[in-house]
Image (cartoon, rainbow, N blue to C red; front, side):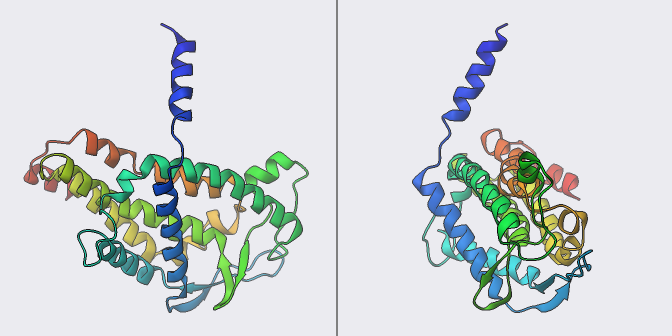
Amino acid sequence: SDPAGAIRSVLLAGLSVTPSPEAIQFVLGFWAVAFLLEFLPGKIETGPETLTGHVPKYKDNAVLHCLVYTALFWAGSNLGPLGWYDFGIIYDTFTGSVAFLNLFGLIFCCFLTYKGLNFPSTEDCGSSGSLTKDYLWGTELYPRLPCWGLPYGLDLKRFINCRFSMTYWQLAGLSFCYRSYTLHGNTLDYGLLFSALSQYLYLFKFFLWEMGYMRSIDIIVDRAGFEIQWGCLVWVPAVYTLHTRFLVQHPSGLSFVAALALFA
């Protein structure tokens, strides 16, 4: 055995994954669409009052976001009328996207740390006395950016945690399923299909419940720092989609009946 050699191989493999122009373009486009969908109509809801008396306000348009984003992702692909990209694009750009998201996430959390200390959106902010803890835990509870057309600003926690992270995870399974279909002689992997469908339905339920999430510990207690924001930018897209990505390269071989039985 050679532990040092194994560690070196892992580090070299990790360093070999770099952002690609195609992946960067895809992620930026993904964010742009999510941002535009912030302007969809919705009822104004509130979160719990904070210790400083702040009451966060949100436009509840999560389900509409989910449905419209799915329709747009299909319409823009080779399966839809526009044909701008291949429906398997999330699989094709995956490693480059994760590399870009990782680098962006590290820098973005520096911005959040600085913003919370110098330009906080509310009084629910401040330093712990440790720069390391400030970076990891965060310096602000409800960071928002002023934005024309959004009266309460762009909520950065909701945008990253929900509108990007959950949407990417939701669509990744479908994209991976299509790529498996094209890579394996136009043969549908029913195990992967029902895995992707179950995740899509699970995350649709999340969007139904998004206002509940906005009143959960992740939002009302945990500040916007590395632990939450990097996790939603990188960990969720990379790890929560791991099993479906694995199935693209290693098909389940399940029959329709067996896969349906497991799904049910």
